[in-house]
Length: 399
Ligand SMILES: Nc1nc2c(ncn2[C@@H]2O[C@H](COP(=O)(O)OP(=O)(O)OP(=O)(O)O)[C@@H](O)[C@H]2O)c(=O)[nH]1
Image 1 (cartoon, rainbow, N blue to C red):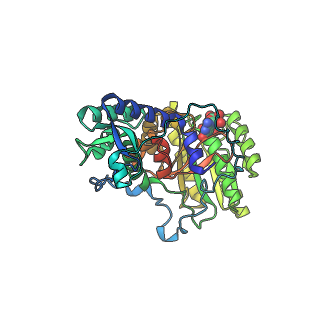
Image 2 (image 1 turned 30 degrees about the horizontal axis):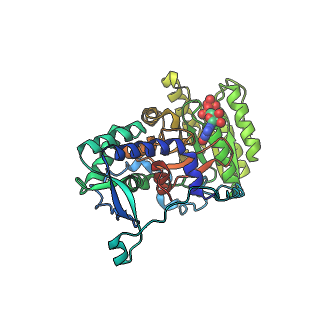
Image 3 (image 1 turned 120 degrees about the horizontal axis):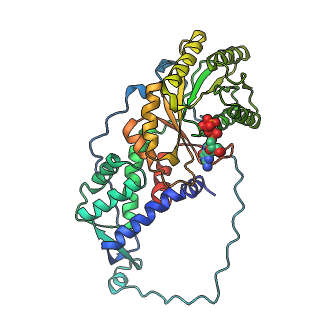
């Protein structure tokens, strides 16, 4: 199956919610029309006023731009999934006893013009009611009120009063979403610094451990040497889990006794990574938001300590977010931006959630780079974020 096909399959819940919603919106006030088989071209108008540019802080500041290697083509999460192509389903033989379809007669004009046969299409006039229904649908798919209003306003621009079909609306929606997402789709930048220190933050259960394991495995496959530091020293289970992932990825995991100082573990991990000439050091951290002051102090201390070894570290601070939390992901970004200098996002659990729209809201509101998306629990279920494919998968548009 193609990459797009897989993404669409995994984002099924999000896309089916939007698809079903669009179907009923158009059916509700639409009329059947005879349309030519070739769909009416729906060209997007000139993009509306550009969104405020993402804050300059979105780019890694700790390493001067000039030092950066070219954007990694094989950046983590970018390699094509290694799963073997599944053997194609045996094609079902056409049911022989199926009711014969009456041969469609071409219309008179069609025959004269030699055009293709017309197909009935339901179209609805884009009016205030339809726009309101669209807004509600987008809000229900976790796009957030502001983003939903902006997206629908841009769709309506220059098209108010025109008749649109489901396919046309899907395409417009998909184009609009891709336009919002395009600037944030950036692979994790790689720097010549050794080790490149990647601090991984996020609430408990967001998928930090899993993401670190997947990233380690992808970096390793790309020929990088990686060390992992199990910085959530307060939870033995979290450390064990990280060890399991380290084993799977074939990457050493540095641990410390339960309850010991995460900053001192981070320092030891830096020393080991430096001594071994490792390319990357991935540091897991605790995600206890219940006591923010403690967590802030803990993260600040980790940063202080690793800067004793490399004052430009950490080179990336990745915030891992769980897509199933929907709008809550927005407040997590706000919180973690106060706790740490978040440089990019990884959005996990996009498979099987109907809340995929939250990614659009995140991109629209914060403009932070989305480095990768998690689409399953397996080691290769971390994919590079492709805005167009995502937009098509989310809206249920066929590739
Ligand atoms: N379906 C799905 N599940 C995921 C994904 N990423 C992580 N998970 C699951 O989410 C659960 C939590 O993931 P962890 O990686 O342990 O999360 P964590 O943030 O490290 O959590 P703590 O160890 O509690 O701090 C696990 O059951 C993972 O298998 C994903 O992309 N898709």
